[in-house]
Length: 349
Image 1 (cartoon, rainbow, N blue to C red):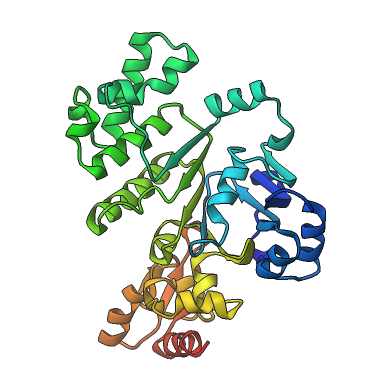
Image 2 (image 1 turned 45 degrees about the horizontal axis):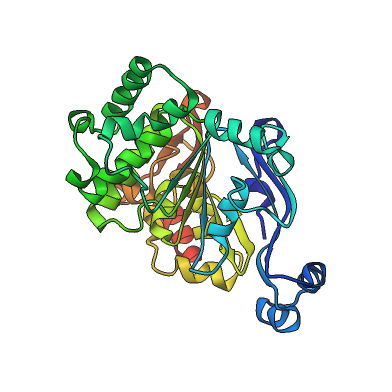
């Protein structure tokens, strides 16, 4: 169930999904959707109709510059969802608006132009051309657009520098490690300067250290130039690291949408709660989440500071800490008792 407090304002929405369905199979599609709307499970619907409900009546928005992470186990429908958003798979019903234009009704030519000008996709499998040098792999999308060779090479080299591969421009894909190849895939998407980026488990094949490097790279890119990102993963830790908001998906529906703090502190269902059991709340919750009323204090911390940063300060000196939020000044305070009470509530959920 979506958290209404986490929905973006309408005028800041880039992607607007409404009543989205994807049903696989041949035959009684409407009957399958009717059974789903009545609460039947996937297994019951498949047994009765032969249809598989992959995405079930989803509605949500993604705001400009936001990293919106869709997280779920294998078979939850998350990869089908992102392919419906980009229309690599045709939705069965519903709408997908990008900047107010419904992607599901676009002609083939309009959809092609959208992908060339505004939307890029990054997948787990890099799909690099083995016979082309790295710079030419990155520049391929610009080549398709008809950009002059000198200009597309210039832009490709600039983006390769951004992802730390400038010195590898003249190499071939087989000469690069898996993590480096994934950076090339990211550069190939970024060179088109897209407004919207779709990621489908792009880092899942990488070893843990390289995966963390790639997560850091994406976070840094979003800090330097925010884009609207929909990121698919089955890894809850990755979702917490990357997401401004997280949508937890199960059996084609979204159990909960919220910020990382909302998901960890207020899991809406037992399914969501299972993902949060291993999380250390102090590494996710911020001072803003745990603060009490404003009171006189001799020291201060930022409202976005993690609770884990406040704990050693309060252990060394139990007097309260003023919490400041930029130009708003003091917005609250955190005392050791406030911290203990909040952490206890989270642990007991």
